[in-house]
Image 1 (cartoon, rainbow, N blue to C red):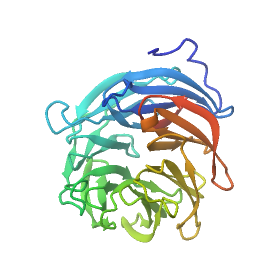
Image 2: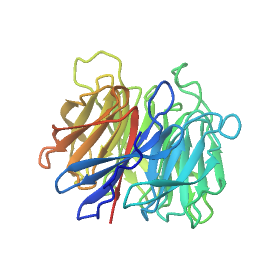
Image 3: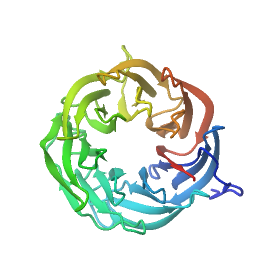
Length: 374
């Protein structure tokens, strides 16, 4: 594979971005790690930049707010010994998209699947799916990761004996004021709320400590409305979106609605994966694996509740992840099992998706993240 094609490092213009694609590298995948593309928002030109960094199973990526560093979870169960995955730190060359490896630390639980950087840029929060815990890591001045400041182990199980035999944290995100961390635990059917101390890098149970989801729902990912008043959780196992009001004065969430991500009459196998609120605050998008579509919803601006608009085929298999570009114009659907990323145009008035004809060929894509070049 070509690492970085000649001419890839053009001068950044207005609306010029790099986007990175995390992949799975095992199970017969041809992928070798994280891939980079240049994206010009004005012209919607996409230029492949090749392999940005070779690393094992970078199944989730997150960018540092300063744009200088990228962090990837290495979704394995035996990094530096059993029962732990890894978390890798890279420095970013925004001219070429190249990533330079800085260090890797044990995630303190097997199969990490999600990471986010807090608002100070000094801490990385990680969810360890098979390990059943969440952990916090200091980000050093040079972008490297230190050893965990806290590891919080979850306990219990859900009603599904196969998939919910124990805790399975699937995401961890901080509140806009950096005072709380929200964790979706698929194994427990819980949205757990932690008080987050960014000075000490600690997590302690809030009061109330959690919101109980429907039995067997399998909450996976969390998205917050731009106004900070409404939150949306995609329930992987029940193929639904749970809607909440959010009070970040107390860290309390109140249930408002639960709505299916599937059209009426669909009876096949399906697992939800990703969820996002459009930057306009008008629409919610959620991905269906099995139905292989993006469910599009309109948001009631006063109530935060959802009304279905359409279910757009992703033109591929198993859309594990999608990302809306920073301008809110395009949606990039990463079809894990058809080895492609299909690009759709977003109608600013209706939220509907239309294929642009752009299809990127990349083996087992599972995460897409954007970074401004200037």
